[in-house]
Amino acid sequence: MKMASTRKRIMIIGQPGSGKSTLARRLGEKLNLPVVHIDLIHWQSGWIERAGPEKDKLCAEVHARSNWIFEGGRSNTWPERLERADTLIFLDFSTLVRSYRILKRRLEYHGVSRPDLPENCPENINWEFVQFVWRTRNLGRKKIIQFFNSAPNNKDKYWLRSSSDVDEFLGRIS
Image (cartoon, rainbow, N blue to C red; front, side, top):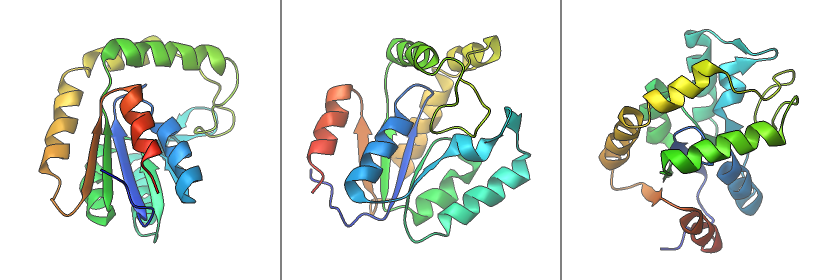
């Protein structure tokens, strides 16, 4: 399957550490599309969480744009996002791989904000986040699978389960 470069709105979903931000950046470079990271909507500078209605409003503003690569959660806005998207990508990696990547990211960005976070949000892993990753490993995955499987047939859909799947997918982009 070859992904056409005519894609204008790409939705990337997956659990923490699955590589959503990295894939979004790489796709954005290849397709010359703007990339939106959910963490920039979820958080404000200083790790201050935005209120739910504000997050929903910001997501809706992105959905209304003519083109984007939008990666990440805020699952209550997924139906609207999917309605506008022409492509849906699900990154489905094991909990072990994702945990390794989260730890690697923590070490790589120790004390500084990642590119997909607001300023003054230095990378950290707290116990609450570790519990979230562990607690949602099965139920969260099932929810994503159900969403992915229910996506309309007029959407291009890609379920990528390994780094080699991702590399192969990126290699097929014209």
